[in-house]
Image (tube, rainbow, N blue to C red; front, top):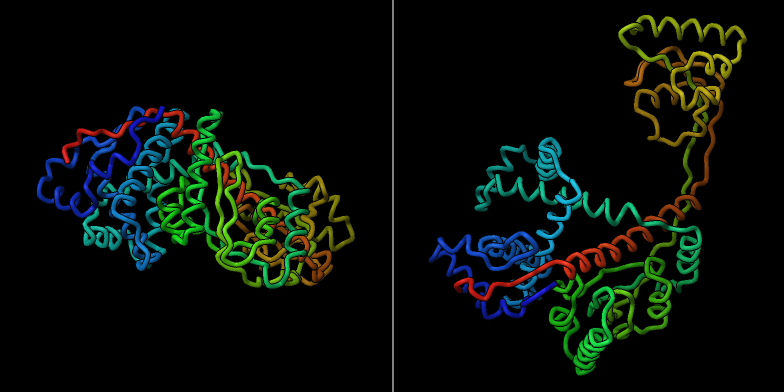
Amino acid sequence: MTRNRFPLLAGLLLGLSLLAAALQAAPQLLDRIVAVAGDDVITLGELRDKARELVTELRRRNPASMPSENQIVNKALDELILEKLQLAEARRLGITADPETVDKAIRRIAENNRLSVDQLRQALAAEGMDFRKFRERIRDKIIISRLINREVTNRIQVTKSEIDQYLAREANAPDAKREVHLMHILVATPDGASPEQIAKAEAKAREARRRLDAGEDFASVAREFSDARNALQGGDLGWASLGQLTPAIAELVAKAREGEVIGPFRSGAGFHLLKVAGFRGGKRAERKIVPQTHVRHILIRTDEVTSDADARQRLQQLRQRILNGEDFAALARSHSQDPGSAIKGGDLGWVNPGTMVPDFEEVMNATPEGQVSKPFRTRFGWHILQVLGRRQHDETEEARRLAAKKAIRDRKAREATEQYLRRLRDEAYVEVRPDSGL
């Protein structure tokens, strides 16, 4: 059950500037509780830090169009509530992030910024951020990512017919309307919404439409009315191809004019308004020709009993038998320790560049067609291989279908994640404290 939601914060916090001033003047308030989310609490210090993060992000994205201070504070609280609820759900499900995983993530962040971990630590300190808190945030992000993967992403299914429809929409789109820039307002309804809740949400969506028709800026209206997670960014969804949209929305958008507002219309998530901010011509898929090699191999692994020298010698003997006329496939079935390919006579099929480990690929590329390589080592053990053929393979259709599948999966994952988070929040006890002291 949700109680005392975010409009109360306008009076509670009196804006970000007053909040910052109060925090500097009275550091003892840092741990004062401002909200309860499930069994966890949100402190004033956490809210301040989250609001500062949002301000930094918004200024980086679009400094010319900043939300109001109250909108930033409300969004900061909303995100903190969702984080607390997700972390609590992850604990319930036993989802964790071990220290080694967190260390690796921090190293990747440092490398991406061309820094060592010590330099990253110093850079964070220069910005006033405690490294321990930074590490905790990275850990929490990993845990939340694992929760969403388990509960949402891994359950997404994409059917063949969905891929076919996506490709058909892409093919039928006019050249000038291959991509669309959309802006979005969502007035959410909870799962199992009552008729009164539905009517209230619809009335709110129609009021948003009335104000848009009166000439108000879409981004400003989105910040005030939208329940979507991108509301603070003015509901900007960015550019997408028509194929990436659901069939129903793609049909509406294809018929719309640039600048037109569509809706409100209803889905399972609530009532939507869309603005077609622009159209542009996108690139049609280019042909993708890939060099492929048909290869088979025999693998001998090393262990406590079989040394490198033993494995190499066995393969030299097998190679000589093949050169003397024995069948490669028969010897692979009898001797290869790669169970996946041994049953197929060592056949690995047609291999794309980058599929095999570098040591294997290097020997494969250097071996003439029809010949058997000398024994060589990879991290899997010792091999000999035979190149059965080479070709230039047209993977255009496969690449188009894979790209379509990914786009559909990403869209479904975004929608399902929104629904999951709304359900998590709707089912939790949330209270904003009116007695925080500001």
